Image 1 (cartoon, each protein chain N blue to C red):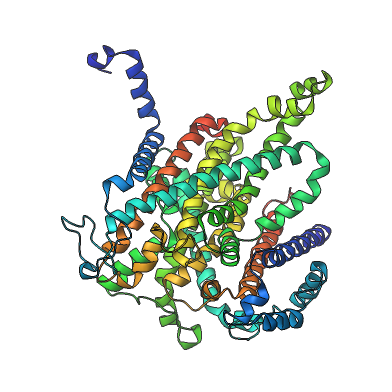
Image 2 (cartoon, each protein chain N blue to C red):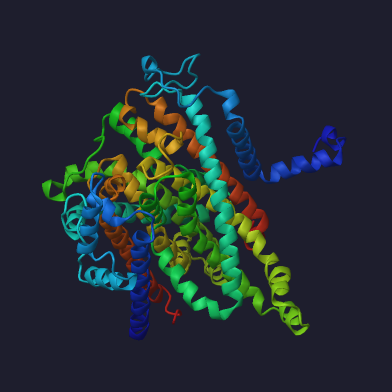
Length: 313
Length: 287
C-alpha cells in the first residue's frame, strides 16, 4: 500500500512537471512577444529591448524554463503585467469564492447523482429510468451559461427569491453565503450530475446481473440492502473514476459560472486576464487548476484500493 | 401491425421499423440535418446579421423582426441563424481533426512500443489541463480567429481519442489473425490498415459525435468569455455574452441563441447515444 502510494506520488510529480513544460511553452512558442505585451502599445523598440533584457527573454529556452519552474516550485508564479502584483497573491485572494462554489457543487452533485443513478438502475427500462436518463442527456447538452441565465431570469428577476449575482464571504454569515451560492451551484452542477448519474446507472446494471445479487435476492434480502450494500459498493470503482475525471468539467464550468454570476474567484481572474493578455496570470491559474485536477485524481486512485481491496498495483 | 402496413412496399416498412427502433437516433439526425440546412442557406432566408438599427433597439419579437432585436438594434433571428454556421463548422472540423490525429498517434503508439513512452507522458500532461482553460490560454496568447479556435479545442480532445484507439489496438494486437498476418510476412503498414484499423472504426464514430458536441459547447463558452472567434462574427456564445445585461428587459436576446445552442448539442448527443447503442456490442447486448 505504502509502496503504491509512493509510486503514484512520483508519477503525479512527473505529470505536473510536464504540465509545467507545456504551460511554459504555451507562452514562449506563441507568436506574440512577451516583452512587447508588457511594454504596451506605445513603447519604443529600445524600451522593449530593455524589458527583454531585464526578464532574461534572450536566454536559451531551457535556461528560462529552469529559472521559471524553480520559482513556480517555491510558489513564485511571477508578477501580473497589468497590476505588478505577485500572481500567487492575486490567486490567494480569489481562492475562497472558487473553493466554496466548487466544493458545495461537488458534494451536492455527487449525492444527487448517485441517488438518481441507483434509482434509474433499480427501475431499468421503466418510466422513472427513462425520465431520469432523458433529463440527464438534456442536462448534459445545455451550456452552463444558458442554464445560469435561465435560473437568474426565473428565480432572481421574476420571482425575486434569490440574489441575481455576487458572492458573500462565509465569515459574514452562513445564511447570505448560502443564498448567493444556490443558483451558481445548480448551474455548475447540472452537467456533472448527469455525467455521474449515467455512469452510476451503467455500473449498477453491470453489477446487478451478477450471480451474488441473484443469490442475495433469492435468499430474501430486501431490495434496499441489495441495492445499497451489495450492488452500489461493488459499482464503486467506475463511479469514483468518473467523479475524478469529471472534476475537469467542473473546473471549466467554474470559470464560466463565475462570469455569469459575477463571483470574484479564480475564474474571473483568468477571464479578466484574457483581454489584457496578462499571461503570467493565465499561466498561474492554469497551473493551479491543473494541479488540483491531478491531485484529485491521485486521491481517486488511492480511494480505489480502499473500496476494492483486490486492486493492487 | 395492420393490414394497411402489411400491404406497403417492404423497403418502406423497413424504414419505419428503423425509425421505431431508433427514435433518438432519428430525432437527433433529423434535427441536426434541419439545422445544417438552415445554416447553409442562412444568407437567403434572413436579413443582414451585422446591420445595426439604433432606432430599433431591444424590440420584442414582431412581424419585421421575427425574434426581436438586441441592444444594438441587430436582428436576433438573422444572428441566431448565422450563429449555426460557426457552431457547426467548429463542431464538425474539431471532431474530424481530433479523430484523425488521435487515430494516427493511437495506432502508432499502440503498435510500436518505442514511441509510446514519450508520447504517452506528454499526453498525460496535456490531459491534466482542463480543456476550457487550455483553449482559453491558447486563444488568448495567439489571437482570435476561427482557425485558432478550432486548433485550441482540438488539442485537448485528441489525447482522449489516442486513449480509445490504444485500448482497441491492445485488445486485437495479440489476436491469432494478426499474428498469422505477421507470420505470413505482411508489411507492417498493411497489418495496421487491414487488421488493426477496422475494429477501431465503430467506437471512433461514436467518440467523434461526442467530441463534436463537446466542441460546440467549448466554442460557445469561449465566445461567451471573450476568448473565441473574432467578436464581429455572430455566434451564440457572444450573442448571449453581449445581451446578458439586458436579460431582464429583453429576455428574447438571450433565450433564442441559448435554445439553438441547447438544441444542436442535444441533437448531436442523441445521435451519439443512438450510434453507441447500435455500434457498441457490449452495450447492445444488454438492451
